[in-house]
Length: 201
Length: 248
Image 1 (cartoon, each protein chain N blue to C red):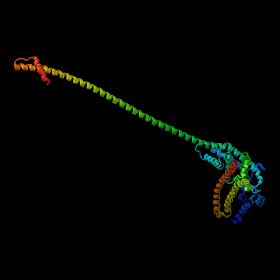
Image 2: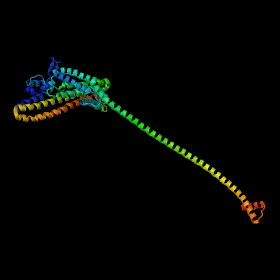
Image 3: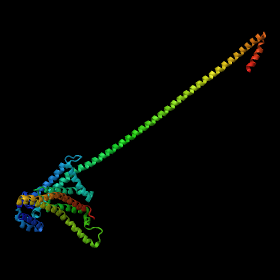
Image 4: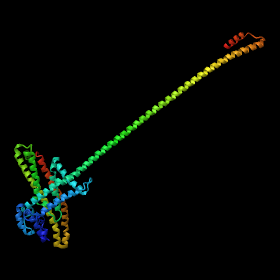
């Protein structure tokens, strides 16, 4: 176990040792046969630097172009599009809420108007009806009063008539009574005077 | 066998097409693959353009908003003019790191020249934009206000040194993390085969331990791959912020 683990350990140690640029060449020599690839510790092999920088410049430049011209605008478009959409939807919702609120207020107002109008109509009708009833009543009362007066006048007239008839009858009756009792007729003027005197009493 | 277990073998640069300094190497091929994957991911992800995003679109939007949030946080809305650069950097580093986690692949970011070149892109952007926008006022970056005159030379020297060391720390951080992680993974995975090859059944049983470790380290490496991409991006944003606001 120790025999096989040993070489691996030394390899690691060797790499740890020449992990600095200064020691690159020493490391190459000590390690050269180890992996057969030859050359210095790869990250510090300066012969590859120029090539890597060139290819990095090409590909990173390409990436920068692709990102700044194509990819970032696309993603930004989506992200900002969503933000705009949300803001737009919110504004729409706010507008609709205001509209429904206005509609509700208009409904309330219409309701209140209708109610006050109905009240006006009701009170007008009530006034009109009570006025008509009043008129009717007054007219009927007047008619009744007229009839009463007419009736009272007729009664008065009839009474006067009756009273005058009574006098004639009384005079007749008195002359008849005097004739029967006395056997002779009394003067008419005297009988009329006596009847009038007793009627006046 | 020694070649297969050699933890350094995976960093070898091999020419694929052509010869010499500027041959198309495996490194270049993986750079190309990185670009293709990033572009494909973003284009396919955004092809549906649905209001409620699907999985891939959600990921694409998330990466966009994540980087945009980082830029806005560190350098404000003015920093958004660097957004394409920062986004490209983040996606390139992240995808290169993640591709490197697939066995038998090459990790572009495990080469210091690549990470150094990327950090120099940031630093050159800072310097060029800084001078173009602010002229000599950009030099106020090195002269903090409110420092007594007699220690000003010292402070200015420290500021200059710290500014110059930025590309080095930025590139070495990413490179060293990728390199160390991949070596560790390879070494522990190598133990498994070595134990079973030399000790037979017992070795196979013992090999479970380094295997578990290798699995754990793989999970850790995924975290590191993302974290290093984020750290690289975040620091790039902070340095770019200096170009926008040189005064301290």
